[in-house]
Image (tube, rainbow, N blue to C red):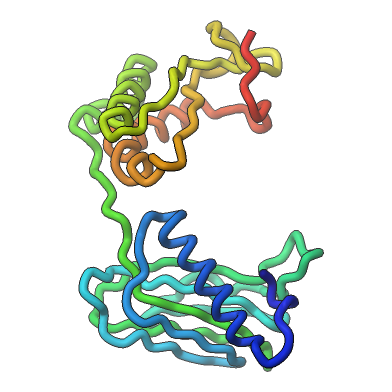
Length: 246
């Protein structure tokens, strides 16, 4: 839903619902975290500070989304720390494809209270929604993965061993991955035969196993190895969306 869609006396209520829904999706679905405490919401202009009060038990982040209602430049700070460089903002619309209308983030907070300060140049109006949040617990790399990446280089044997552990972890969690062979890219197509560039494991994760994959199996057994391998063996820029084997 875009700012342009809001009209009439319920404008702010609709906007609050839209920003709350968007932030919740990013935190809970995209990052497997959770929102805590009582959120804050405001539609205003110029400079404003939202206070979230005392940190609820378990909270370690502040999550927020802002949306501009007029064109302008937005700057956000969290507990005095600038969130990012000033963002030039244009209200969202159905036709818009190349400008920023809104932005979200989730930042660590170590103090017992939190405040989000938003500044917009001139009289530009904006809306901001914020809440305490708790980040997902991410597994640390296994001893095997640490050994495989200790020298800063990953061999094909290490890449394969790490992927096998990833598959085993997913299966043990009740979300087995389908058979995934190594794939090379040659002559514009994917192939299971050595040649061209690669190889890589091309896989998908069942949606019902995504949280376990993202927070446990992937970081524990494969992420660091995968990152190094991808750096050493970058994938083609625009490969076919679905591998066609030859």
